[in-house]
Amino acid sequence: MSLAAVGLSECFAPALSRGSGGLLNGGGRTSRVARRWDAMAAHWKRVFVIVLALQGLLIANAYNENEEVPEEWILLHVVQGQIAAGNYSYLRLNHEGKIVLQMQSLKGDADLYVSDVTLHPSFDDYELQSVTCGQDVVHVPAHFRRPVGIGIYGHPSHLESEFEMKVYYDQTVVEYPFSGGSYNPEDMEMSQKQFRSTEDESQDEESVFWTILIGILKLILEILF
Image (cartoon, rainbow, N blue to C red; front, side):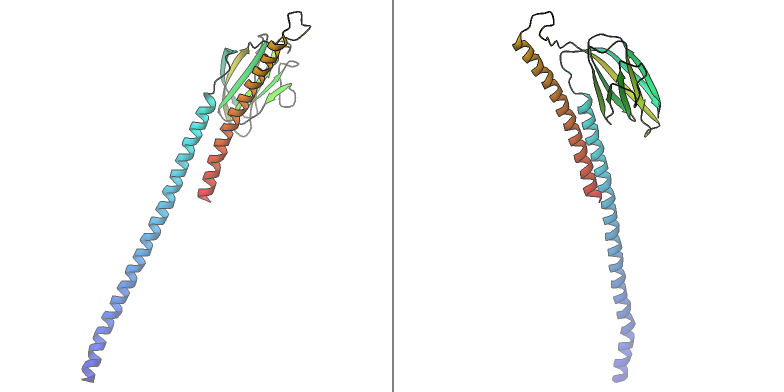
């Protein structure tokens, strides 16, 4: 009986070991599948975040581009162009009165420099400037001597920049005392309030755009890292 028992135990021992090994191998396959699913889930999570960020940027950009301009601004010209990195493109402004230059970088980063002293303003020789990464706006006063030089600079961070500039005539009239015309303090105060409200609205719209953009970037960093 003892030999038979030993024989039976020896016969069943390899089977048990094979069975336990099979169970272990099955567990290994399960863990590998779980890791693969985790990797795929992480990958698609990153893709979803990137798509969401791109949609947010498009919405913010559309909001920034479609912002309304004051009724007192009359569109005079729309200029489009391309400029290589580190180069300038020059324009001349002959129109009298208060002028608003509103330039949007369609590609790359174009900066705006304005002067009534030289027709070729640059980043080290200018009277007015706007060098943001988004929309650049310069208000040219009526007392600037014509022609006014406008310099558009292609930032070196991009091989080529494309821009669209809208030229507005600001017909808002602010009368001052002793200017030869009638002076009404109430009218002057109202005009000044309208001018300040226009500036405040443009600043608020720009701050909303950058708030949306910064929020999207923070969301990407928190999820990816």
